[in-house]
Amino acid sequence: MNKLGVAIIGCGAIFPLHAKAISAIKDVNLLLVADIDADKATRAGIEYACDATDDYREILNDNRIDVVHLCTPHHLHAEMAEELLRAGKHVLTEKPIAVDLPSAMRMLKAAQVSSGQLGVVFQNRYNDASVYIKKTIDSGDLGKLLCMKGVVTWHRNESYYKDSNWRGRWSTEGGGVLINQTIHSLDLLQWYGGEIKSVKGSITTDVLDGVIEVEDTAHACIDFANNVRGLFYGTNTYLENSPVELELVFEEGTLNLRREHLYLWKDGKETLVCEPIFSPAEGKSYWGTGHKRLIEDFYDHIFSGSKFWLDGPEGIKALELVKRIYSSSQRNK
Image 1 (spheres, helix red, strand yellow):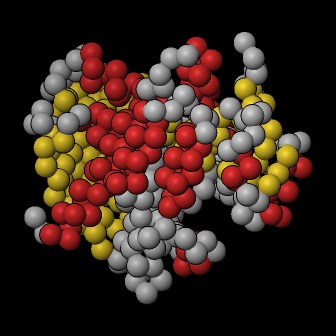
Image 2 (tube, rainbow, N blue to C red):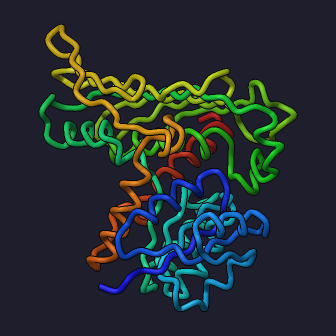
């Protein structure tokens, strides 16, 4: 098998997770990093002993590059992915797939006619607890899933938005807490619940009004086609980045995720069934530990010539849910 040449576009906060994961995979070489900030690209290139550029379009005709990771601001995902897919590159993009559904659909169409694959990073699906929950639902070991809830209480202050002027704007971030911070938890809820029948939600700007034009707080009631009900609350107004909380109630027991540990409540007794394996090198604990696993899986599929399962049609589902919550809040129905 020939080695794969890789480029990463965007050398910001999430860049190191991708770069370190790539460096650890056999027969995969990071050859180029790109960032509109030339100094940032140069520093990243020196650190990972690869070329650097401030113009990602150099990648389009670079025959050394087979795979491109998009770690850029949200509004750049669609245009870059379309160009790269038309050039026959495999593309792995950070969430969200795009800032709006028409842009996401163009990405999906480009992937359909490309020799490259499109993958979307929802790394929390690879966390041990997430895998355990999904297997429990699919196996029916605890009976039918009845209802579930998710709570995300994180902290983003004024400087977080002022340090990156693309954040906090509808046109560039595509929204606020829903599309950026809590989209991973919403993705898990829709992954567990399946087809969505209806959504009633609302968004507010409770603390950062005047700083951002998007929401910092949201809640939603999600009814699924299988009669499962999901409740969700997310905010950036807390003063800590608390661990995500999930609860799934089944006919024969309840699974609770607390501080990244998964517990089973059954027959009046609580049992720890899954705990994380985490090291600071993998990033922030509340991001989850699945980046490395997802990236490895993406390359396994490329090497084997098989279709990556977290592709465009799968990756767009969380964006669809986010947009439904926005629409419900705007229309109050």
